[in-house]
Image (cartoon, rainbow, N blue to C red):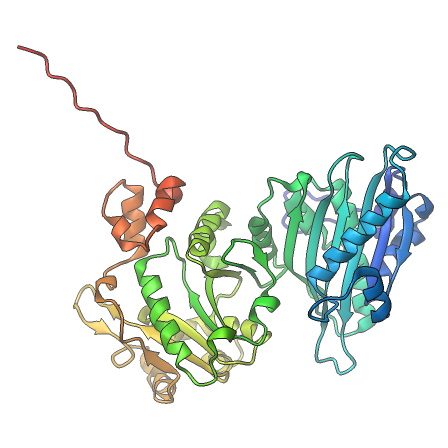
Length: 489
């Protein structure tokens, strides 16, 4: 037996893959099918080898030929096969077959399930490491509606056989967790890495649905992926739901805004509107192929060493209410954000930031862990087709307006800064709203917490109402004080 996940307060023994599969097989009420496409039948193999599979596996199939696959599940409009839509079709089709072919009268206690995956492993040229969608649709009571757990994974190994084996491990972990750890979704996510290393596999999207998970917030589950180091970043669309980063960012021009957004203020929106306008005027930037991303780093979500999860939800909700896409990441440095985007797009990129943030970028202390120091970081940051849109800062002490012309960086960094500035990598946002320069989120938070008034005017339209309605950031409505009646003399 192995020892369980690091960081747990109590160490538990991790069941072997054979033990997990055998426990499923020996449960006389668990019965279902396996449909695996693109990487062998690695998950069902574990259940066949464990023994007792005849009572659990009704069917195991793998429709590798595209024509056969389309005949079974229907063709996709985009002609692709490794997609979430394809996985949903597989799960729905296979569950319907079980319901059609097995009578509930003859099997009143059976808990039906379908496990499916659609995967592409590493190519021969080893340029694309491979990825896939994995899911299970299942019951824990025979008369219950079906539940679903859907994952998107990216392989890190550089050998197809190893990737196949990894897929079999996570598939077995998912099935076991779905039946025996469903009441603890956060732990279920951790257990997906039983007998795996995070250098083998990345999980960048997860969605729970169905009656078992009606109280599960999938955004919080995504936060667990980042928090546990299972992925570097996750994204949410304007509707507040999880989205696959690759689907949103693929071959797009990307304009990113990093901040705490606690809460989002008029400064953030003024920066966004002006930078976006300038970005669209750049060559090679097509409005229809441009994605705007508001990024919150994990370090900005920590409160006393732990992630304040409710605070995260509050900030994400406010940004999504403004129609924005939100990314939550593990990235401390800006160059890592650019590297991440570069995995999905080679098109032009932009970063919008305040002058104070650019000063921090030119601080060497943030790059001591790199063998090439700040030069290595800037090589990764600026060798791409990237431009920084700089929002000015008002020095509250001197009243001086700080922009790219009078920005004060460390003396050793002056020439490096000049190189990037005069090569057009840093441009000033000039059409800014001067009234926004005195707005600071920390002051707004202080006013909210102390029950003061006036902070509402510093936020985008509708945001103050949301903060009040949902009591965000420590807001408490002042009790109504009725005038006391004077006694008659």
